[in-house]
Length: 128
Image (tube, rainbow, N blue to C red; front, side, top):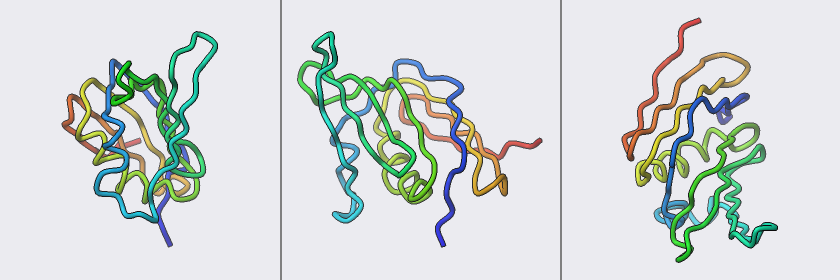
């Protein structure tokens, strides 16, 4: 049985930019995330990268539509553990900018802090 994320709390999100191809490159065909692209009321292109039942990555696209300026990240519920390891972490390793989040796994069995700085990804346990 997969180990999933119950709660995702973003603590810091600062100018995080990820190549959109990073969400598809090297991914098994049966795990490819669904990417929805639309325009908002300001005519800005928005990408919604659905990674699991409880969310994914949302961001505005650069003019060439090759990069996502991340506005939010949320991972939880079904498939979140696998999508986190197989899709999100490899994509974050190709990013620039910063992300810090606290993740509660499977009803509090473990709590981790995710720290991303210019493609360097660190996960550390959180002690209560």
